[in-house]
Length: 267
Image 1 (cartoon, helix red, strand yellow):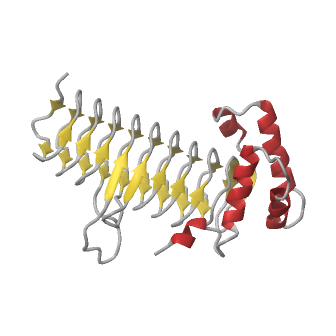
Image 2: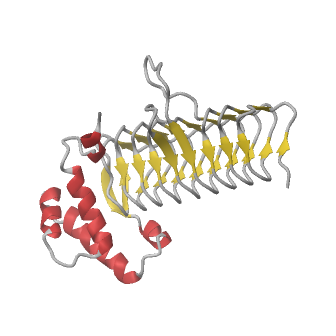
């Protein structure tokens, strides 16, 4: 079917539109952008240069994606922004492309970004992520599959948030967060327990859930230094893959003094 474009929308002649695309009033699609089949752009949406949007995405009113990063004195060519399929990106969300010409900010599929969410340059988001209202993600962060961030969470640059973890409202995250955990508080945020709803959403069976529970108690409830317990667990043979994910994440955190593994790769 043909796309539906409002007469007031501005579509650069080099932009590529898929089938069944809907573009609302006063929306701008800039040069080189690609809009996948079935994607809907509501009123006053801005899609920057060379942004690639997959299929069946919905961008609500006043989203701005692909505009230059918020970097002082930024006056060089910027990189790309790629977004997968079936994402809901609500009102006033901002997403920045990479600050490097040969890199990309990457958003996966089946994510919900609620009102006012900000994603900084060079972030990587996997799939099935929920980010509640006004959550702010600094540059170079990695959010793994199934992460759920409640309202007004703030995340420092270069943080990695492990799969299927949950951050409570107003949490300030300044270091990596291990998979499957619940965190709250700020500077530092602290692990409070296991995200049991998250691990059920991940499809883990009862035995796998119990192994994660045992690992949690061993690491955080033993009254011994956390890293010491992690190393002891890492030395055990035959660790379950989900427990291994927690252990590897914690060991990587310990390699950098701020607990942000991605800092090791900083330019």
